[in-house]
Image (cartoon, rainbow, N blue to C red):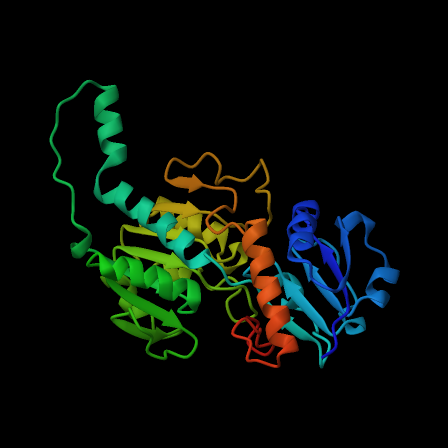
Length: 310
């Protein structure tokens, strides 16, 4: 693969340009905001590097597309990918960031932060004994890099961590990995469910009424993709106490519309897709490493399997 001309499209294009210039990479670059991208740019490019694009582009004109984010559903979900075009994604500190994000909300729950805040407001002295992490069971949907890192950190603190994946293949740091489809009967055993799944045709609306009905007073954290959840079913599960609280960082439509019922629900915590932020430094590091590996014809651990969608 001969890569000489590279188009970089991102809201962070200026920061990326500054960082790339410091690397003194001997390639031809065009750094652009999306509104300035033209068909001529695609025709000129050998590689297209992008983050958070809103339009669909004709990627058959390039040899390589690199996502500056971990997710690639913007490129693949319900789309036909051109044969022979390489697709890679960013791998960096996402797993660590997401693990710490999830851990913070689990600790918030077992340490009774909400309860003590309410008691303080009432000037009421009422001791409650915090629970221990090693008493908790967590089921993580998605056993890829992010799910594995989350499992590693939680299990190191004594949490029993179960995984759910398409293959059901055993992975390190999980007490057990279950296939999607066989997981429902095990849901009533856990205290928390964490979703890290990508959006594919197999995971769209996976968390529906049927799944939520198997839960009982569980904390639910979504750091995967919003469209993997049926939001109406989620709201019903909150009302039925199948879910005691939901922490949602991703949504089907982003930004979350102001008329969404999720905003005002007392048992929902909303964050604006910040559980795994790609910093310009990390994005550039991963891109440069990938470029060097391509030119050296080395294996790419961040290569996307088109048939799987991730």
